[in-house]
Length: 164
Image (cartoon, rainbow, N blue to C red; front, top):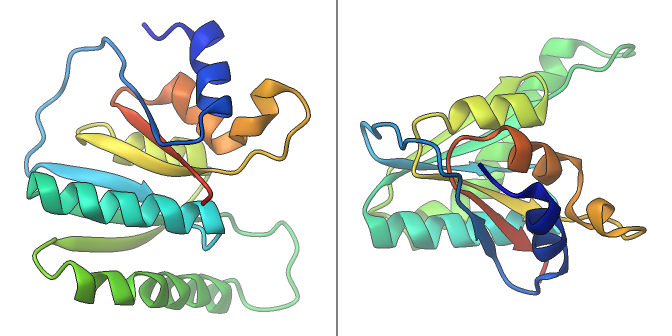
């Protein structure tokens, strides 16, 4: 089990990517793949870069997942907003496909809580790669809510990448 009293401060303060590995039994990865969370932010871009590099080195597939949380109240169509999210994800990964043509990319927009969706997507993955963009305050806040949640919830390695 991860020692969360040590993991959060180390992850929050590191100026480089941090890999947190759980001692849980590693499930099968068929096919072997990594999961990367994509939200369009600068830290997410850094995570995407590392995820493509790692997928290329490991010769595994990369599942690029954007998580859409439907607004409680919207003036527009929820379908339109969902399709906008899919278009944005496609545009975000387009250049990376050209740079890493050997990486099998599976972009997908899922609906739900980012922590739950990414943890579920990572159940049989080699790891989950996410950007770290906490806003400061105390140490636990420097990792952000998604990273914090994944460090508690995910059963595979979690790779956190700070913004450049």
